[in-house]
Length: 480
Image (cartoon, rainbow, N blue to C red; front, top):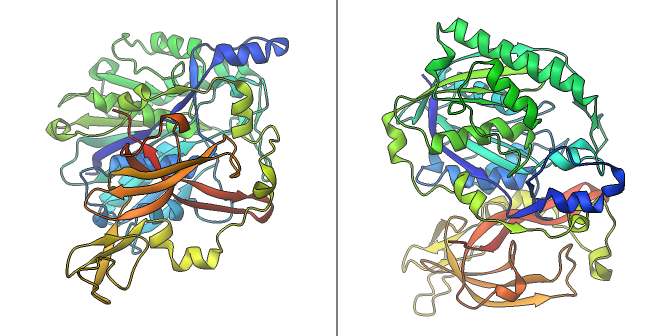
């Protein structure tokens, strides 16, 4: 039987208060939901958020044993280039891995989870990462503009030492048109809200829940937590009553703190449920999107071993208010912004170099001298230690998981940046090694020599005219 071995999540640092949105859009109507939503930084997208969630998931796990990675999103960066392959490169997974993208529906995350569980149960895979993330863009002042939030979740699936067994599932399929986007379009279209609520959520979710409990001869009261996707706060509460759930059984949907994260929403809620789960708890997860997937899980004693994850709680606590709706529009490229002459001439890294040096650029893999133990990035043939100088005695050494401290830094208002100033400098890593890196998710005025940092996989350059997005690692201040 397949089960979940570990979990992780990523919620962007920035939050946008919906009252600020309301003030900017007052003439266009009223916000359908209050609270705040998580906003991806300008150098984040579905790929980087999935990589961050996967990095969190792999804490304490052996990434070298992972032989599969499935990525689910409705907002892929590339429509002709495998997005899952970029995440696998960032995590430096073995090349003998199966990777696949799941997309086009908000229930793609649960579909990826089921596909991974089936592959493991069949013996096709031993250990599979399932990542889900969305960074959706909607028309200004639309329902999605208010309700959508950005974020990602990840699970490591296997057979041994699982924290939750996947006991079974029940799925339904309906060609139900709630949100849609044609190939080549960037902005979504949404159908009438009442129809989506009454003919969609209120009909399909009970159908999936009843189908699951009947299939496995269960009672809804058997579940400690019931997770179901719903983008409308009122409908979410009404569904709980329709299903006969107590308030304690209903998993908080994060709509007023993070927003509707699309593909990632049910999986992020599952991460939150597992954070508080006890051995023996039964959890039901129900996704939504052209039907539903309902999964039945049982928590094991191994849940007590999980620690050091950012998951949902620590991500929620690490936040900074964005401050203006206009900055959000600039981040999402819904408003043209002048970034200077240098920005107009930005050069992206050749894809030939990316292919040849993928482990170094995407995996942040450097070298370590086998003779004296000195690590270095980028890869060196000659040991940089002046007391050693060994030649061609290097082994691969991954820096992405290493913590570091700022050695030097500067903030540059001339460097092309959506959110100036651009900050960069050198970082000294724990265990040795130094690298020149850009800084992200930081206040330039708060940077200081010696400040602790960790690495985060981000967008380095993007040139939409040439369909080129380059990724790499940046340094991010550690928040206690």
